[in-house]
Length: 274
Ligand code: SF4
Ligand code: SF4
Image (cartoon, rainbow, N blue to C red):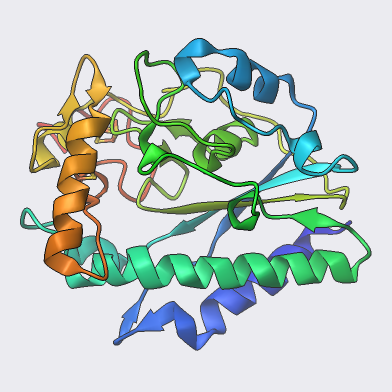
């Protein structure tokens, strides 16, 4: 199937639909897409690795036995959202819109993409919208190579994105893409046989310079240069933001005002120089 036609339809929706604007805040820029194989051995490795703590991971072929492609998408937040969240200890209003209304918009996008692919007679599953999806709250912070995490899930957007060639992890445990780390990930598993991307990296932290800027941005010292992000400290703070901003919540300070915010950072540039 022609990926250009699919991407063009999804991109038009993102850029033109009014739900991508909340209270005069435009949430997302144009997306990135990459395409991986549902039988990539890395999915099974991920499930088997004790350190990854994803024993409940449902493999792509278990989500959809006839699957031919895993699609990984990244929606970068706009400059308006990212810049607003560069200062202060609490999330900017723009970030809160992006986090909550933005996720609702992504769910619309996922449904639109599913209808598009099914309209081409290609059965398609969205793990994150499936009744078989479950996660321990704030699991989105887990780390492939870190022991002792208490969060798990039946699907991980960021690990799928890594496997499909979209980017590599950062110290703050987000995924750094060529449009940076500040944004949201999503995926489809489909019978559509799209041409696959090849991973252009071999190491899980390849794009992260370990500059340490995200350490200094975190208001609750949840990130450490040796051990990465402490997910429990981060989760407690996020819960506090729920109390303050209910019905919204969010933080994202470690993704804004850092060298990897909107690009793959310059390997030779350390935080002090940035
Ligand atoms: S701010 Fe620096 S250390 Fe933190 S994730 Fe980005 S590149 Fe890595
Ligand atoms: S989301 Fe906020 S609390 Fe969590 S690690 Fe990033 S900056 Fe720290």
